[in-house]
Image 1 (cartoon, helix red, strand yellow):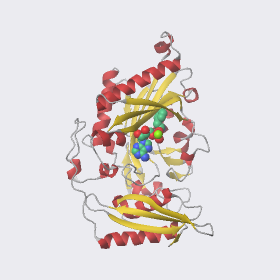
Image 2 (cartoon, protein in one colour):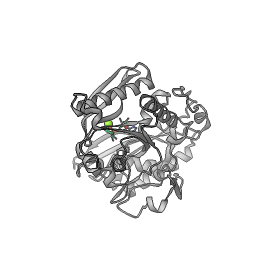
Image 3 (spheres, protein in one colour):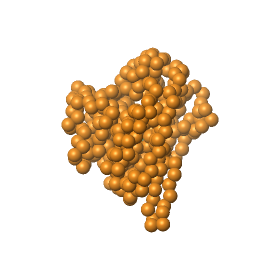
Image 4 (tube, helix red, strand yellow):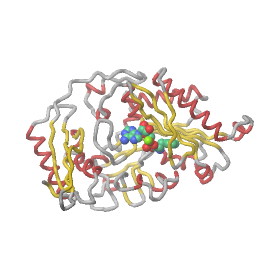
Length: 383
Ligand code: FA5
Ligand code: MG
């Protein structure tokens, strides 16, 4: 395995050991070493890293729009959370797809790597907090390409209105929250992007109603940057804030940073190559990344007969676990079903390092290992 074996990581003064989080012989655990090794890195806490620069800029926006310090900031909460916090507390239904082993990393049957920063809402409310920003690394099993990585970063914002703030406005509580939420987030988008075109899309989240997504028009495309809405009463009631009105949002830091800093590939956030890291400085939002020349890609195809148990996420994870960050993309390039009703898939794997040229020998050895593990782990028949 090319993923480095990390023995333990520190978060918020707590040590998480590999034994606790990666248990390859436990069927209720699906966390690979490649993911565990990312947990302690906390890119969002590095002031010279694009994600840290962006986080601090958003902090400044909130400290200027609202009384400084009113929004309490948390960026060091452990990503290992209970299933209850990640899903039940925010009203995610028991049969929701996001709960599946195919979409979420489970440490055991009751514990996950958070898949969103909303996992911390309920505890914050129980602690009596009414204005907070929670930033952290979040984990999702997903495809492999330039904009998807199994670890990314979110910032959660939450505001509870006190009764005196809305009882005299003559507005319905929900209308007031929607108005304030939209005004706040439009102000944030202007602060980050200048005068961009924006639009609000109605959507659904289990924890808010109504719910919206904010999109901005950037480089000829509409880009979804965040989800938000008015918090469900049940969440407030269950966590000691009955009768209040609140809004919440969750935004993706990589999505914003890729646009603001012209970063073309999500893997770059993780590189320690100084040709990347030296280009960014604390407090300098929007420095445009000057790409260093890309090393050549190497393509390898793999074909196999699948069974019902096969999922693309499982394949992507296996490739990522064997090849590490040199796996740039996995894409389905051909599929057909034979007369007996058995389907064949052909995937093209793009290998490319951001740091050096790969040799044929090394890529062939990795591809052989991928083939071996695919046959062993995915219940498919290689062709
Ligand atoms: C959520 O995660 C909700 N918890 C957000 C929320 C919070 C809604 C509070 C309402 C109230 P979603 O899965 O859409 O929603 O992700 C939120 C944002 O994270 C997205 O808008 C996007 O900017 C970012 N994001 C989502 N998936 C990815 C991904 N695979 N890679 C990078 N960024 C992503
Ligand atoms: Mg979304």
